[in-house]
Image (cartoon, rainbow, N blue to C red; front, side, top):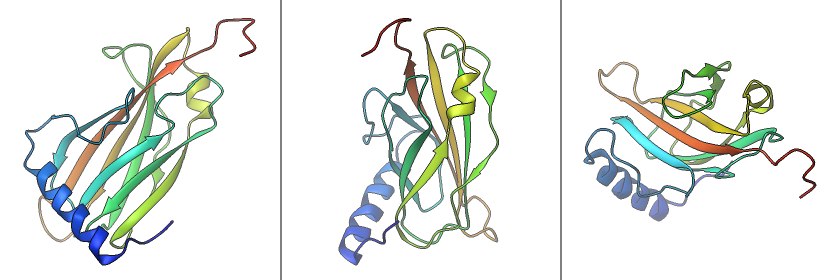
Length: 160
């Protein structure tokens, strides 16, 4: 985990301000195709930079969430889930705490192996619902971001 220099933090603040003015549910310009990032709300000093890898197979053990806190965030929690299709019911895993964090650029490992094992079939989605809270004493300092990644399993007998 690293801290950003002041100039980079200022650029992230400007980027975060631009994202904050995007309409609710708008896609992020930081999408790492084929993953998709959607901001449901963006009122905390928090910007998702991406998830690595941008798609997974059934053997993935973890994914790496990268984000920026433009001011201190008191809580960052990730709720991983899988589903067979975008409109299918989700199966959730335990919450993964990724904060509090001081201003800067941060990484958080999210375990997904057990969750992916629950996904039946050759394809589906892995999702991360990320909830970030700025100053907990101020009302409305909350951001909710959902990142979805396609799950593509290799065909049976395929050795890559």
